[in-house]
Image (cartoon, rainbow over all chains, first blue to last red):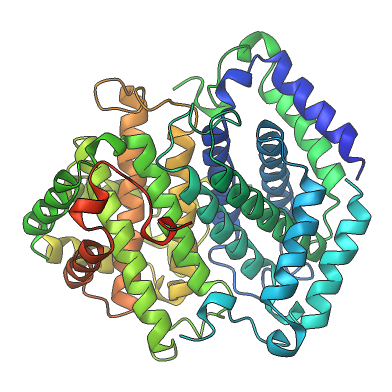
Length: 118
Length: 118
Length: 118
Length: 118
């Protein structure tokens, strides 16, 4: 992904429509929530197997692609408004997750770090 | 963002923990929902102004950065499991949005395309 | 459920804490999103069978109970702030759903009404 | 709200359509997420004032009423599938919140209990 190109296109799209005034961080978080709801709508009644690439219908896959794009678009906008460098954010988070989920404890085990001792 | 590097690191993290078995598209969609909920938690009681970069607290910003990273990590995993090229998905969606939201109609106006005639 | 009693208790809880000022409809919608994210967190890695009452762990069930309560609490607050009568809202919606999902078309079939012709 | 009547109607609606097979707790949680996303969609670009009962448009209010009903319908289904008594769940949660948010600490202050010492 040519991330800078994508970011530039997204920003131009908003600028042309004078949508910056709507794009407060709070509103963008709600926009992400809304798009994630649309993604959940596609998958809600599918079982795990039906959701896989080899079984999902063309229609559902194509709809999922659109919703995933929408989420990413709003996430990129949000990260810009909050001066967050997405690459740095992901790499820091992975580093943190490496501590929270050491391989010897977490192998084959999805228990969340803060519910291990419950 | 060096997207391929990030993707490789995310995949290795899961592979080392044998987490692929949990990462069905359905489950990953729920994981995205869950992380978006944590993001909403940070912003729910802030007003629009308080949510802005010049006003948000260090703690909230740092927490938001983590949640945005988590969302992106699961979104990248999901797009892989569904063979979705994120750059292509975003560019196609922007093209579609250009039709749904022509500048002359949408300038300064956030009305959703499918609610314009209501 | 003695709905009026529950509503009264919820309202008193907020009034005592002077939380009305935070409870705009917009903020309450985000609060619902946040709690739903916590509910999704519990179920994200469970498969359909593991999520059932006969299989779910005591801990997950007890956590789910708390999150469901939180969602309902915020939903009741929201409906109050918007003067929505919840019983009337549910009965109207069921009536609408009866039209959208006639038994002869929808029996054993979860297809959403607006995606039937796709 | 005549809660038992509402519950009976909701259950009959599902039974007639043979939808019980779709209504695993996991799927119902996703259905709640999806409906909450639709609710967020209505409020995402409104500011706090615009979201209030005295300012919100008839259309948005009527759409919000439908989405709130959908959330409640799925929440009632979910609580049934998990044998959760909603009244008892809410009253227990309020009791817990009374401890987490004592009036003297929380008055006029929305800080989440687990982020007070951060």
